[in-house]
Image 1: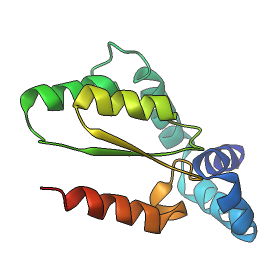
Image 2: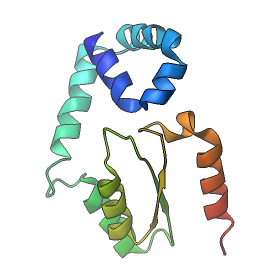
Image 3: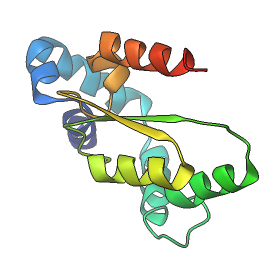
Length: 131
Protein backbone atom coordinates (compact mmCIF):
# COMPACT_ATOMS: atom_id res chain seq x y z
CA UNK A 1 0.00 0.00 0.00
CA UNK A 2 2.93 2.32 0.57
CA UNK A 3 3.81 2.11 -3.12
CA UNK A 4 0.16 2.72 -4.00
CA UNK A 5 0.08 5.93 -1.98
CA UNK A 6 3.43 7.02 -3.36
CA UNK A 7 2.42 6.48 -6.99
CA UNK A 8 -0.99 8.12 -6.46
CA UNK A 9 0.46 11.18 -4.76
CA UNK A 10 3.07 11.53 -7.50
CA UNK A 11 0.60 11.03 -10.36
CA UNK A 12 -1.94 13.71 -9.50
CA UNK A 13 -1.79 17.40 -8.62
CA UNK A 14 -2.57 18.47 -5.07
CA UNK A 15 -5.78 20.20 -6.21
CA UNK A 16 -7.03 17.02 -7.95
CA UNK A 17 -6.22 14.92 -4.89
CA UNK A 18 -8.00 17.39 -2.60
CA UNK A 19 -11.08 17.30 -4.84
CA UNK A 20 -11.13 13.47 -4.79
CA UNK A 21 -9.76 12.93 -1.28
CA UNK A 22 -12.45 10.41 -0.32
CA UNK A 23 -11.57 8.21 -3.32
CA UNK A 24 -7.80 8.02 -2.74
CA UNK A 25 -7.90 5.13 -0.21
CA UNK A 26 -10.05 3.10 -2.65
CA UNK A 27 -7.58 3.76 -5.47
CA UNK A 28 -4.68 2.67 -3.26
CA UNK A 29 -6.53 -0.47 -2.16
CA UNK A 30 -7.19 -1.34 -5.81
CA UNK A 31 -3.52 -0.86 -6.66
CA UNK A 32 -2.47 -3.04 -3.73
CA UNK A 33 -4.91 -5.79 -4.77
CA UNK A 34 -3.99 -5.80 -8.45
CA UNK A 35 -0.23 -5.20 -8.43
CA UNK A 36 2.10 -8.01 -7.50
CA UNK A 37 5.49 -7.32 -5.97
CA UNK A 38 7.08 -8.93 -9.04
CA UNK A 39 5.16 -6.63 -11.39
CA UNK A 40 6.00 -3.50 -9.43
CA UNK A 41 9.63 -4.61 -9.24
CA UNK A 42 9.78 -5.07 -13.01
CA UNK A 43 8.31 -1.61 -13.60
CA UNK A 44 10.81 -0.03 -11.23
CA UNK A 45 13.75 -1.94 -12.72
CA UNK A 46 12.87 -0.90 -16.27
CA UNK A 47 12.15 2.69 -15.27
CA UNK A 48 15.52 2.95 -13.58
CA UNK A 49 17.22 1.49 -16.65
CA UNK A 50 15.66 4.10 -18.90
CA UNK A 51 17.25 6.91 -16.88
CA UNK A 52 20.56 5.91 -18.45
CA UNK A 53 20.91 7.97 -21.63
CA UNK A 54 22.61 5.10 -23.48
CA UNK A 55 19.79 2.64 -22.72
CA UNK A 56 17.94 1.77 -25.98
CA UNK A 57 14.58 2.55 -24.34
CA UNK A 58 15.58 5.95 -22.99
CA UNK A 59 12.80 8.33 -24.00
CA UNK A 60 15.03 10.74 -25.90
CA UNK A 61 16.72 7.90 -27.80
CA UNK A 62 13.31 6.58 -28.86
CA UNK A 63 12.20 10.07 -29.92
CA UNK A 64 15.40 10.57 -31.89
CA UNK A 65 14.92 7.25 -33.71
CA UNK A 66 11.32 8.11 -34.56
CA UNK A 67 12.33 11.55 -35.85
CA UNK A 68 15.28 10.29 -37.91
CA UNK A 69 13.16 7.50 -39.44
CA UNK A 70 10.59 10.06 -40.52
CA UNK A 71 7.93 7.76 -39.07
CA UNK A 72 5.88 10.65 -37.67
CA UNK A 73 5.50 14.04 -39.32
CA UNK A 74 4.75 15.86 -36.09
CA UNK A 75 3.76 15.29 -32.53
CA UNK A 76 2.60 16.97 -29.39
CA UNK A 77 4.04 16.40 -25.94
CA UNK A 78 1.60 17.50 -23.24
CA UNK A 79 3.06 18.01 -19.76
CA UNK A 80 1.44 18.87 -16.46
CA UNK A 81 3.09 21.75 -14.64
CA UNK A 82 2.92 19.79 -11.35
CA UNK A 83 4.22 16.49 -12.76
CA UNK A 84 6.55 14.75 -10.31
CA UNK A 85 7.50 12.01 -12.81
CA UNK A 86 8.42 14.08 -15.85
CA UNK A 87 9.50 17.66 -15.38
CA UNK A 88 8.50 20.41 -17.78
CA UNK A 89 12.08 20.62 -18.96
CA UNK A 90 12.17 16.88 -19.75
CA UNK A 91 8.94 17.25 -21.76
CA UNK A 92 10.42 20.21 -23.61
CA UNK A 93 13.66 18.27 -24.23
CA UNK A 94 11.73 15.30 -25.58
CA UNK A 95 9.72 17.54 -27.92
CA UNK A 96 12.91 19.25 -29.11
CA UNK A 97 14.68 15.95 -29.83
CA UNK A 98 11.66 14.63 -31.75
CA UNK A 99 11.01 17.93 -33.51
CA UNK A 100 7.54 18.09 -31.96
CA UNK A 101 5.53 20.69 -30.10
CA UNK A 102 5.44 20.93 -26.30
CA UNK A 103 2.43 22.21 -24.38
CA UNK A 104 2.39 22.55 -20.59
CA UNK A 105 -1.03 22.25 -18.91
CA UNK A 106 -1.22 24.43 -15.80
CA UNK A 107 -2.25 22.74 -12.56
CA UNK A 108 -2.04 19.13 -13.76
CA UNK A 109 0.45 16.45 -12.76
CA UNK A 110 1.24 13.25 -14.71
CA UNK A 111 -2.37 12.26 -15.37
CA UNK A 112 -3.25 15.29 -17.52
CA UNK A 113 -6.20 13.65 -19.37
CA UNK A 114 -7.83 12.74 -16.04
CA UNK A 115 -7.09 15.96 -14.19
CA UNK A 116 -7.68 18.51 -16.93
CA UNK A 117 -9.76 16.64 -19.52
CA UNK A 118 -11.08 19.75 -21.27
CA UNK A 119 -7.63 21.35 -21.59
CA UNK A 120 -6.15 18.04 -22.78
CA UNK A 121 -8.96 17.45 -25.29
CA UNK A 122 -8.72 21.02 -26.60
CA UNK A 123 -4.95 20.68 -27.00
CA UNK A 124 -5.23 17.38 -28.88
CA UNK A 125 -8.09 18.58 -31.07
CA UNK A 126 -6.21 21.80 -31.83
CA UNK A 127 -3.08 19.87 -32.75
CA UNK A 128 -4.98 17.43 -34.98
CA UNK A 129 -6.80 20.28 -36.73
CA UNK A 130 -3.53 21.80 -37.96
CA UNK A 131 -2.80 21.32 -41.66
